[in-house]
Length: 416
Ligand code: HEM
Figure: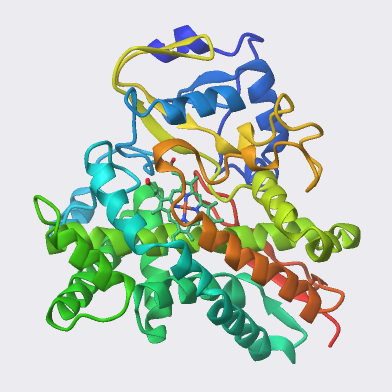
């Protein structure tokens, strides 16, 4: 038995089999999350060698205590070293860390300051029209077919267009950026064959080279875009930000900033598709409805922390060095915080308390952009595609990423 098990086994004696990639949990994890919160709010999960924290108050406490709970490896579901073949490919590139997401203070503050300076409210507000035009353009392209894959033909293109526009990247790169980002995720998850992982590692190295090249171009010829701002502001820091350090920032923004929104679009369409009365809320209570959709089907189901010293979470002793998964999605359905948590209630008190964007120093830097994209995308899909429904036969394939929830494919049909 491990240390964690002796201290945090579920009290009922009925073990929690936490396996987000298992068929039933991919399909509907929420009954299990209810059990987790009730029977074993903080439990040791042996297969992943980590504590899972599931109640709202406990998740929030961990997120806020960044001095004790480090974000190193915060997006790695497994810490197993890569196979030698994969490591050999990665060695031809640069280290994947530190990024904004997986760094602690003071490195995090240095990077976050840079991103905050470049990623202003005004810049996001200026995206309204381009994002609307992009969303309409994508719908125009498939409208006449009366059927489409809302993920492949809309869900990932829209957010990647938005973040590319902000960064100042050419639209033609969208496909490559999407594939590289997806491969980065798969590489971190490390569940596919070594051969596939070698391919993912190759993509990640290519993505690094691409961004280094882009930054070098802006060093020679500054432009009016976020990459130039990042570079120029970074050069003024002490010590100045080097190209390799700068390269990880747009990479992080592209990856964190489109796969999540893709998932939010797919999850929201699936939540609303059979519920015409809830669809009406997109017209009347748009902003609150979007918060509820994010709470109910959180694209980032949970992420990871490491205890830097002995700690106690939810009454459970967490020895120094232990890994924890802070389970945003379980916390977001905690009935202690959200009355009738499975219902969409845009009028609920404390609507914005949800943890879909995290909390604390690592709270999502792209939340305003994500909200803007969802405010545009969801009403447009339901308005422009009348009687939106699942296509026949139904294709609704969940993506198998340990800490995320979303669709790989979601085919829909409508009346032209
Ligand atoms: C619905 C869409 C999104 C969801 C659900 C989401 C979720 C999250 C969550 C939960 C965190 C906290 C991570 C942690 O505590 O370890 C986070 C951080 C982050 N997000 Fe998002 N995000 C979304 C959209 C975006 C967008 C559009 C961007 C960029 C354009 C973005 C960029 C980032 C970055 C860079 C961080 C790290 C911030 C830091 O560590 O200081 N995200 N996001």
